[in-house]
Image (cartoon, rainbow, N blue to C red; front, side):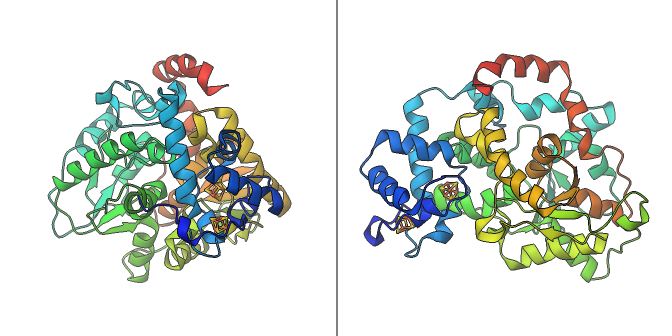
Length: 399
Ligand code: SF4
Ligand code: SF4
């Protein structure tokens, strides 16, 4: 892990005073960073209790000292000191079943799959031999509703891959659980090595964040495959004339195309202009005229999901979600457009108004049928396994 650069320190406190969640003034932030560097446990605890590990403070530092590496290293130490991982945090992490973490949110959601969905999952888990084609990586979130993706005419040219326990490792990484993150990520890389393909098309931005940012920076490991996001892939195909829009949101009676704001994800800005331009072009092609929220780019606010990575408490999701809620309220729009699975789920469940998922809308606009929209997530979560295991983790999830 490339460390926080102590040699270039000036202790200006901007990393913490400009952080959306710390609540520290400039003077308090200078004091806090000094105390954190000298190991003051109380101050470290306070800062970690407010940090969502978005890494945006790297943008605020005037001498490029990489303060996010400091936050992440402290979080890792904090998790080590805890000795046991809270049950609710373990439950959010897929891919650790062989280490005794028997149940998790994703595999519980998969238990209610229909016969057709189970057959799709069985097919997706197998390695693919497609040296002349790109491969579609179907992540934990994508596999909740695999049917529409498998039947998609738009995505029919892409072989699909992703077994029930295959995960990029990001939830473990962002939770400070480095050993778990490495194990899960290594397993996925090994599994991908069994396939042959040109580029990996990544449907989930969190996976892309793990592969292109977190893995090389914090696990000293380069992701050994060329990757392209699903949005850049679809944009590329549309620009090449291989895909064409056949319907737009204004064709739907109830939709006002400009009554919507863009909900950027934590990682969006870090992927660069080309990624954001592809998102923007696709949103416009579908017919949306999105308003930007007050905090975007380097100052983007987390949807709330980052709260769970602190100690696995659902209360922390609600605590962090409030920051985005304020931006959303101030924008005065009734709808929001998310391009990240996590942002969509959190916003659908915990924000007012209606959440739309860009990938789903683009596939629809390009002619696909969407039989199981992502907003049916709550229904899918209401199965015996999920309810039983969520009841079991309630003491740590609700503290
Ligand atoms: S990682 Fe994000 S939340 Fe944490 S201190 Fe830096 S800017 Fe704030
Ligand atoms: S890490 Fe950078 S922004 Fe934070 S106190 Fe040090 S010099 Fe300032």
